[in-house]
Image 1 (spheres, rainbow, N blue to C red):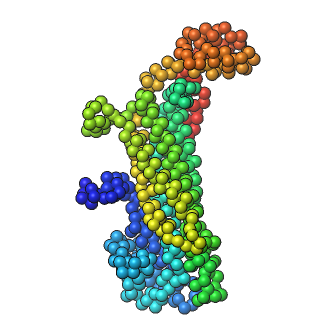
Image 2 (cartoon, helix red, strand yellow):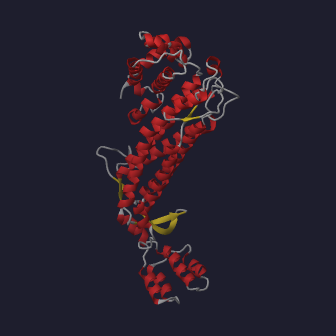
Image 3 (tube, rainbow, N blue to C red):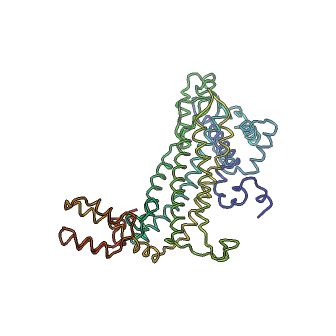
Length: 455
């Protein structure tokens, strides 16, 4: 570990640096500056390509290629150069505008129209569009693929253990049996729904000037359809155009994405706690890793550290994500800057989410079912068959079926022989009696196997 990671203030940039590497291109300050450059260049090209704006000469193919290359090749060293300018301007977006003008000063076509860089824009036009691009690409390139791997791992466990009976534990007490695979399928099904919500959030952007009314645009070209033109520009970037804003885009779509991500995180936090309990009960074993130590003093320990790490990081991520979704849609009158410093922490929320997903995936990959422990628990819980017995009694209108079974089983340890003696005394058809007598806690699983395979 290098000195820089050892002295990092955040564990995302220190201990866990390698696990969140994929997010850096999207949510680092370099990622933000690079997207600002991308938006500014795209805006300049769009203006130059519009015949109705005759004062802006169209660019040659060579200039368009140079502009595209400037964006494609934008490097951390270029971000450093922008930051050096910001040290003087004390304004990050203006520093980026000056860097663009300096970088293109050798190109006569651009120099002639260099004052159209950032034309009609407030800083928020560039920033909100850049943030929307960061979120869309971070979601699609990093978050969703990681979530898909977790879902695939859960699906594999569901299919592999679809037929493996397991004692349920509602309120922590023995309850109607299920299968280990069906419980994994439950988690996967919840995540599939949550994933669809995350993927379905349409990220919005505004590009309508200082307070959202195209004041500056219309002062220069009063007859031009700026709303239609700017809508087309935002949509060309793959974003949804928001026509009604103050100086800032209201961040409602961002809040939807943050809430949707927190919902998926909550589902997985719940799953981590349940799997932790299944490991504690002996339903799952964990594959050993050579050289790994579970306890500094107890040599036998194989701790469920991956699920514990995931639970902790999902909690941190959600604390930040929920602050985002509550704070960002709130701004005093037409503008305040409280959103600016908050948005710089998007990488924190998604970093802890990614870290938790990695831990969860690693933990799932270590799990091995323990059929012998599952079978032993089931064989010690014949009382769970009180449910099917009283249900069949209801079918045949036997008086007080629930109450009879309650008196026999509640708070008591019921044996197979005692239950069978009760069943033999019931006034029910012989076929149903035989079916109840053949039933065991391990066979009383309903459609669990079928449901597990359908996920």
